[in-house]
Image (tube, rainbow, N blue to C red; front, top):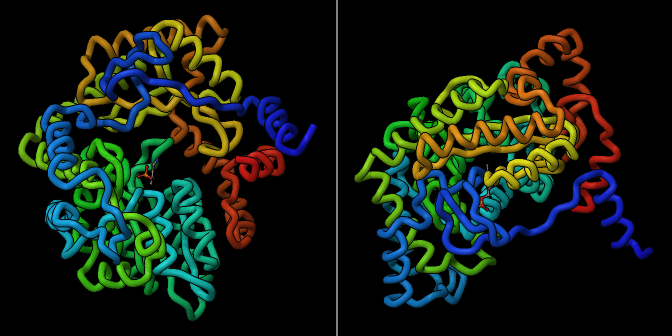
Length: 441
Ligand code: PMP
């Protein structure tokens, strides 16, 4: 066996093997998956705007008017009127002075973190931050202190004990992609002020889903204009592809001059930008998209709880069903698929090993009846595998219980996260095995 074969065999052995599933047609609430009709319950097309008629028309018209590609990076000849237009609209939507588009959310985090932290500086990062923040931290070559998930007290401790003379940056998702919980943004901003740190908030899963008119979790917390760098993607509720950073005019000018993924990568494609612009207009002009998403999220959660799953009642559109074991999660996904419901199994390295889950997402275009049927199907699939629905559900509740258990050991845990560039593991598991897989992925 060569090295690649060995790594693939190891991934298979650990139940972590992946393959690409094929969707035919557009990204609606019901799709043809590998040729079979299924209810789509794991898309980030939260508002259903990726295939909305106005958004399709805007993208098609942009292709006819401006062509398909931008042809160059933003700093050469790739900045077109459509980019400028969307940047102005996003800045107004997010209540910030200025905005700059990036190729993707991944690139935006890499670029912004790399511009705001380097050797000699320190980034303070939530342990469940998205991989693009983690990789941004690694690429920046700054020191990284990983604080316990949502734990402002631990962040405070880290800020008091670390950071030295260099620049300090606190980086957090606002809505966490795999758990659907929300960062304590008010406390984070307050701590940043007290400890002379900047704050970067990734609103990938909040924009279009939370806050007044879908303006995000920062707006919901009343913190517009208080966060140094707001990152967001065009690829989820905005139904397109690309990303943005909203910030002060000075900060945006700084990123344009220093963020490497912006400088060295082709500008976003005009049809994608025009599509996102049309989606933003839809959200602004018709608040029912966001209201429907929130109401359907509540319907989904209530239906799952009624079927016996451990799912708390809220309007959060990301609904994790934590199974734990990787193979059980894959089997549950397969069982649901066979019954017509597609809810992808999420495993390491997307979530910590041993905390595999189905990550369900409501869409504004689902019907309540579809979501109730999906909940029944998931229960049937779990029962058929001998899994108890009551043991499947919210990771947050479980984590709260774990946190209480490990409270006396907090100081020790805090010291153990000083390792540069590594995310600590939130609960005991075979870290060596998981990191081998992370490297392989
Ligand atoms: N941040 C978060 C929190 C995300 O969930 C994602 C995508 N999964 C990204 C950034 C990356 O965004 P994009 O898909 O535009 O690269």
